[in-house]
Length: 225
Image (cartoon, rainbow, N blue to C red; front, side, top):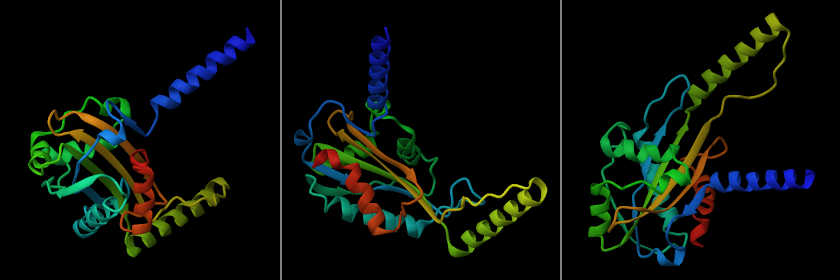
């Protein structure tokens, strides 16, 4: 009986790990997915997320977009063209902007049911490539003034906690940057998703640092190497 229970628990764990995988092919192998047109990324970089303020940073977002294009083209993937789509990234509630932003919240199991909007499909089809690669990058990079303000407030709160509750907390909650990258490969003939992958948002990644992005993107596209 004990052996049966252990086996059952192991099977449940395997299913759970599989379902929570961060990348997945739905109907193809990596060698089948070519040629690929890289659509310039939807880059939504702000000065903070769910903090004291959240303002879209157009210059940082554009720099992030340029870095992603350059790095992805250096990874050895079968990318033949780079195309541009106007996502209106400054407004994440625009039609295409909202669609791209929602890639952040997907699991691989849900991503396979996506149908790519016609505007994006047409841009890839007109490039002469059958497959398109979409990338969404969402992160923040705080300026020095904002970071100092938040650190000052955090210290003040910890002092108050010590005075009133006799509690000492040495942890650091304020971070200078955070970034996550999410990607989808689709068939421009059908609009159906072929592959989805993500590197969820983490504090150690800086959206405007080449080394950080290279590490994220190299891990993200490991299925294609």
